[in-house]
Image (cartoon, rainbow, N blue to C red; front, top):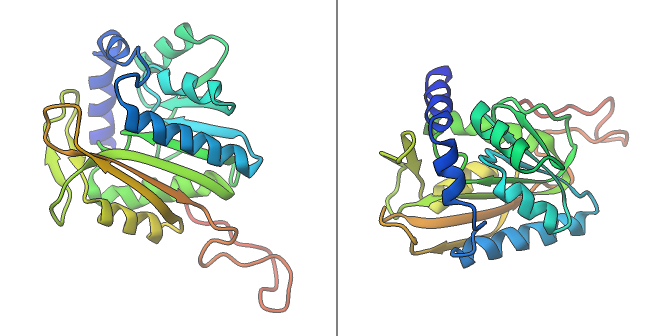
Amino acid sequence: MANHQDETRAAYDEVVELYASMFADRLETQPFARAMISTFAELVRATGNLRAADVGCGPGHLTVMLHELGLDAFGLDISHGMVDHARRANPALRFQEAQMESLPIEDDELGGVLAHYSMIHTPPGELPELLAEQVRVLAPGGVLLVSFFGTDGPEPVKFDHKVAPAYSWPADHLAELLADAGLVPFARLLHDPASERGFLDAHLLARRPEILPGKKVRGGPHAPGPSTQPAC
């Protein structure tokens, strides 16, 4: 796991200013992505828990957008350079270096997690562990929005992303992984890309149920003893 993380960290550290300038418009030219993030924010507000993590936040442009949409948002990223830029550009918001597989967040803390194309560099065999970590930090009823490159084939496809090696996913396959992690996928959007990569742009919304599969309920005749936290 460390190899691909180190490669991704180093690659993004080298393109901070270019990357920040490319996304300075905060999705003004991407109406579908903008609509899904607005919907995500509305759903998180409806939970009453406004705490939301922008995981893989890059230069922080979407963390700012979530804040403007009424969430208590903060950004996490593996790249020191990206976090440093985000802090300088948005001093009123909180940004921290972190790996998506090991988030510095307590169990059941968040109303929402946004993963905007930030899971694409994770090898398919390691994605279940990463998803389990997102589930761990979501409060019951919390919402996850995953955006990614979609493909029509049956399996993930590795491709040469401009920054670091990445994977496109069949939407059904990724939705199955979300369900296996204990989430309930309930909405998706797939559309032709604005780029020349040829993949679909895909967005999946999923919610953490009140009780995770395999997690005991406190009290009651059918589940005695303390509850069991999901593995991370």
